[in-house]
Image 1 (tube, helix red, strand yellow):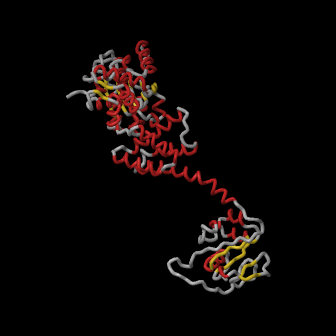
Image 2 (cartoon, one colour):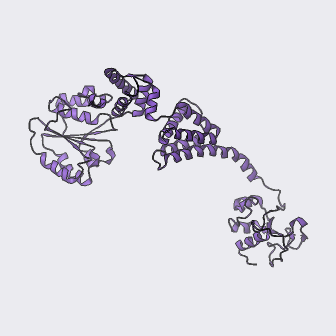
Image 3 (cartoon, rainbow, N blue to C red):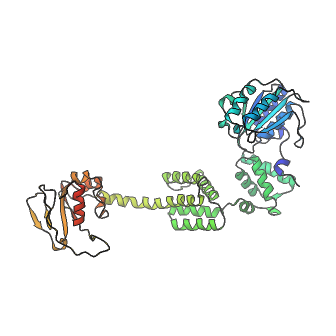
Length: 456
């Protein structure tokens, strides 16, 4: 059985470590000067060489040749994810006082140290602060923020950084040439970009695509990774600019049928938007652009990524349509009638939509204030004058009310909201000055008077 490429080409010397020169140089000087610390902390993302450097350092301290196939008795590796309890750390604390069997130092490499429990950290603390002279601790973690400050302060911390894309590409090309893998530069660039700075992930992906064809091309890597074609992504961006929600929905449906994952599509759209910004191209408006990017970031973590992606894109597309119509709506809403002009409008809605009810002549409403109206009469600003209604208004009330009384009810009524502008107080203030007439049916007048605290 063959060995994975990332294990075959794992670094065996500090000089072979790629992309971490700021760390390997410091450690090499410490080895030459004999200034070895009692505890090291290696932090950084996955696949950038933390464990490899820890193993190399453990062997270099003891002047031992590094052979991955051989395990030395005085170099102990502990996986904190499976040995995280206080009992394992107590056992380690008791054994550190035992002298090394053949090497100069006994080196403990604790990988994923952030997985230790709080009690285990407390048990390790004293030993880490004042270990025996023959013991060296090397802690490695991808989540340094989970470590107690008391642990961090007792170590020399080295922060590993993600590999630069060009260095990852060069490393992949070196391996491809050694393994006689025929692969294009574009394919290697895509592999390095997908690895996101992780050498191990990039080499593993190269190991995977090497068997797709004798000569690996960009399309082969895209097929393995499930990456949608660039022209589809650019079409979606164009449809966002033109607010073509129907075309966007069709594209999303087609990509789903072809097996493209929504999380990957969201990542590609976000990357395409970023590239357009860097090139100085106009991509949507500023507020809409920020809204889109924020929604795309949340797609992979959504319980339904496909629905989350569709909602994010359609929301931007439809909001653009609404923003185009907004000026006309604001202009219509801000239009005011002439002062002291009676506003009236017929509302053609039956009492019950499902039943045909003939108009009836209602009895006058008894009131002592000029705000209320009488049946089949129209009141002007003076309560003493009245004139008969036109025949077309038979069976309805025309009520004169002060604007202040209408505002007191906040939203006075829900019926006829489309014709009466929902009776929103701000709108009423704009439309009504002094007394105004509103043409309502008899049920609406009854509801209106109830809202105003009148039972008659």
